[in-house]
Structure formats: structure tokens, C-alpha cells
Length: 381
Image 1 (cartoon, rainbow, N blue to C red):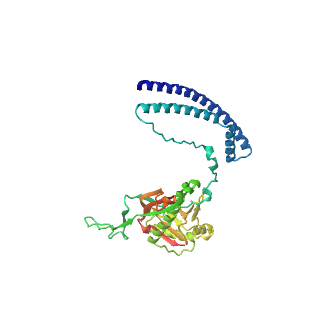
Image 2: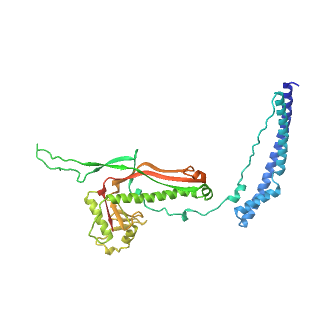
Image 3: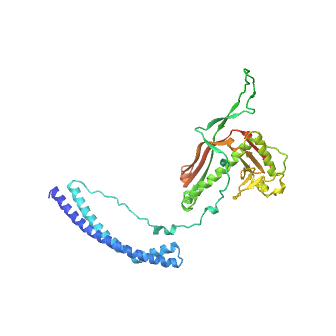
């Protein structure tokens, strides 16, 4: 028998086996559909009965698996399918050997690939439930320093900005007669350098904790950002306090002291836009009775508790302590950023690859530009 005839015989065998396989597969499909419907009905009934008994999801899953085992779901169909697959595999294997022999080659071994399906029922024992988490975690409510000033983007980490000298220059305007020499005025400015620096921190968590503590991967960056902002608030507030004048007054009542600080800025041609204050002093001002003020109608409080002194927002902040207050025109300062908030995670930091841990990095490159230090005053109340 030559090659052509051998191939023809093999094709006929394969075609005949394929037809039988197709018929058997169709039969198995129909049987599977019917078995699926019957099983689903039983599962539905069982679920309803268990729900009436206040059963947990795990209880229901265990009962469903037991029901499937008792009914031998798909067992008969799987045996039929396997027997058909074996028959087709043997026919093809025989044909392959004949072709190898006719071509002068030996058949080679093919490594089998094991496939396994993962179903939700097999994972039911690992499903965890937990209560809403944020209520029990660290508080996030706080008025930030960066809420009071604008943010300016810089292309580099080294910047300069102009600041008018005090006094600005010499000479002044005046009235002159016809053909008289006009007075000369000059202006003096100083270029102030500012180097932007990184505010950064890292946290390390095991990969197992990230898998099993379901809220940790989401909450950890939020918590890190909160701590970064806390540190940023203190850093910027300390820089501002160190750069601005300390106010003095003869007033004794806290609210009246604030009026004096506002007056100082207005006389310097600035417009105070807000007052940041230690919460202890804020509380003291609100608890002072109206008849204790020499000037009535100083304080106003809106429906949400917002407090104003002569129309200026009075804001209690946690980054001012020791009865500290800052009154100022907050348009005269700005945060300069060359790189905004960045978060990264890696398992290649230090030895974390070996210890099966993940490192989270949070950082921002920034600096505080104080355009006019005399647009602010600070004091201990």
C-alpha cells in the first residue's frame, strides 16, 4: 500500500470516528443541559430553605456541595465523554504512528497540560465579611494649610520670585508748576531664592496582609496621605511664623485682640482674608458673652457653625497650638510644586523581595513662597 492509499484509509477512519464523536457530544450536551436545570432547581429550593433558617453563606455552600456529591452531578456524562475522548485519541494516535513510520520518523511524546476550573463554590470557605471600616480608622477631618493658599507649578526645583523692598524706594510724587522738573521716584526689589524639597515617607506591608485584610490596600495610601498632610501643615506653618512679624496690642479680650491685628494689616495697605487660630482660643472666643466686648456685633456665626470676626473667617486648625494665631492676606503666600503627589509600590525595595513584602512610597516636591511677610501677623493670645 503506497503513501496515498494509506492516507486515504486513515482519513476514512478519522472521519468515521469524528461522526460518532459528534453524535455522542451532542447527546452529552443535551444531557448536561437537563442535568444543569435539575440541579439548579434543587439548589434554588435548598437556598430558600436555608435562608428561612437564617443560614450563613458558608452553610448554604456546604449544603450545595453535599447535594452535588449525592446526585453525582455530571459523573455519568463525564465518564461517557472520557470514553469517547479515549477512543478518538487512540484512533488518532494509530494514524500518527502510521504516518511517522511511512515518513521514516518515530512518534514523539507530547506532555499533557493539566487544566482545572476554579468555581465560586470552591472559594466559599475563604469569603470573609467585615463591617464598614472607615468609621473605626484614624480621623481625616482637618483644615489644611494648603487650603488657604494657592498652588503654583514650577518646571524646576530652583526658583526665584521678586519681593518689594520696605520702603519700596526713594522719592515721591508732587505737584509742580509748568515747565518745572518732575520729581524722581525709584523702586527696589529683591529676588528671593526658593529650593523645592521632597516631602516623602514609605510604609511596608506583607503581601499576605494585603491579600487578607481586604480594606488595607485602599486605606494605606489614604492614611499615608493624611500623615503627609499633617507634617506638611506643621512645616509650612513654622516657616510662615518664623518669617512674619509678631503683633502686639493693649487689648485684653481675645476677639478685640484680633480686631487690632486686622487693623495693623489694613494700615499697611493689605486686606486680611482669614484668621487661623488654635482651637482652644477659638472655643474661648465663642464662650465669651457679648456684653464682655467693648465693641458689639464683632462675631457672627452662620448656620453651619462658620465663625467670622468682622467678616473674616475664623478657622480653628490643629497645626497651631499654644494659643497661636495667624492673621493675614493669604494671597501673599503660595505653595510651589515641581512634582505633585506621587504614590508608588514595589516589592524590590531593600530585602522586601525576599521577605514577600510590598513597599508603598508617597511623596511630593514642594516649597513655600512667602511673597510678602508683612501681609501676615502672628501672636500668642
